[in-house]
Image (cartoon, rainbow, N blue to C red; front, side, top):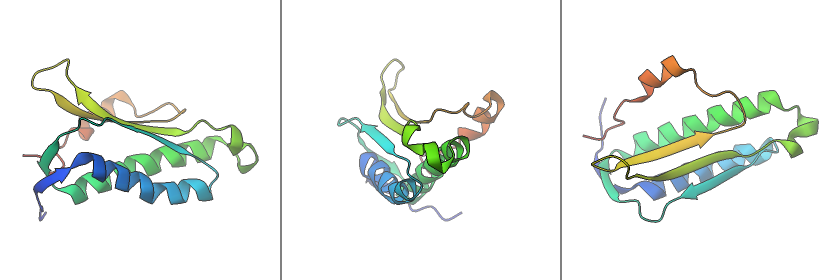
Length: 121
């Protein structure tokens, strides 16, 4: 894998991902809400890998909600939510990106596979 690691604004990566996926969400009569903290640092990472990961998580949530709500009732479907902040309860602080929807979520055992660094050294 050829990484293109550079100093990047993580908030921009997240906002770009939301912008890309919102087009599909609106086409399926679904919504995305975004809560990105203003104090997120510039990080040394591969922004393309972060963008791809966030887009994939958002699309998976949209697919899950779309499967649960037929077209005729999507007006009542809760939005897919993305939240990004710093978890300061640990040291050093950790970037936390959460994508949530109204479905059951990822099985606990699968979380073990979601800990790859995505290009963060």
